[in-house]
Amino acid sequence: MTSPAPDGPRHVAIIMDGNGRWARERGLPRLRGHEAGAESISAALRACRDLGIRYLTLYAFSVENWVRPKAEVAGLMALLRRFLRAREEELHANRTRLRAIGRLDDLPAPARGELQRVMDSTAHFTDRHLVLALSYGGRAEIADAARRIAERVKAGALDPAAVDEAAVAANLYAPDIPDPDLMIRTSGEVRLSNFLLWQLSYAEFHFTPTLWPDFREADLAAAVAEYRRRHRRFGDIG
Ligand code: FPP
Image (cartoon, rainbow, N blue to C red; front, side):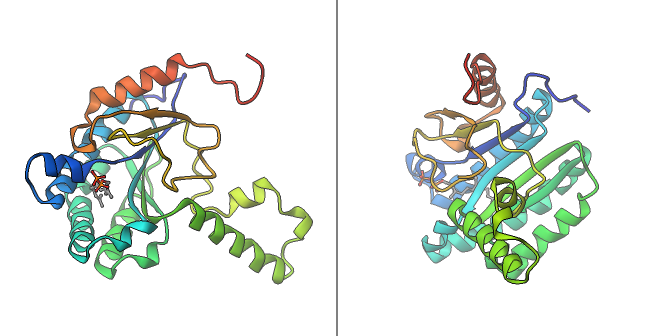
């Protein structure tokens, strides 16, 4: 395996934006843009392996995305299933564990089932982690954590005075995964769009005009090079 890069990033999170515009520029249906976007995921996984990045989190479907036209939502869910089937072997070959964060119960049963199957079949890998954010919202995640904490307080299992940052973090969807060091958003939009609101507190941000379907290994390498040039201080003096 590639050893983790000592100067990081250990965890990269990506908002994969611009599939629709990529398709429109070519006079293609939006779903063709999403299909091309699925190919970029493989490129990103290869780049992570080569750069020694152990965790890759991808914003694949937000809680807000359910309001898109029914056909697009159905197409994305079918694409998720095809993606999982097509990439399972590659995940195994690269010793990559698949995880998912979000309100996964919202997913249609076939997509949820395929997701669970591949998560189970890769659960023993520890070298690398691919985390798909599905029906994910940062505020929803914090609200879900607050609800779980309230339930424990109500049950007498937790003292309200013990509810601190660590307690909130421990009740997020994947508390064992380290916070992202670097967040990338493609397509020129400069927004967080409800992505990993808690976990991105100290992350470096990289925005690129490249549309997600055009994003390749060299683009990820450039973002990482920029990250490594920056001086990270965590609020301390430089
Ligand atoms: C944003 O582009 C992208 C999405 C909402 C979906 C991301 C999905 C993929 C990259 C395909 C792989 C899918 C799965 C489920 C693994 P947009 O549609 O908002 O683009 P636009 O802003 O140009 O319209």
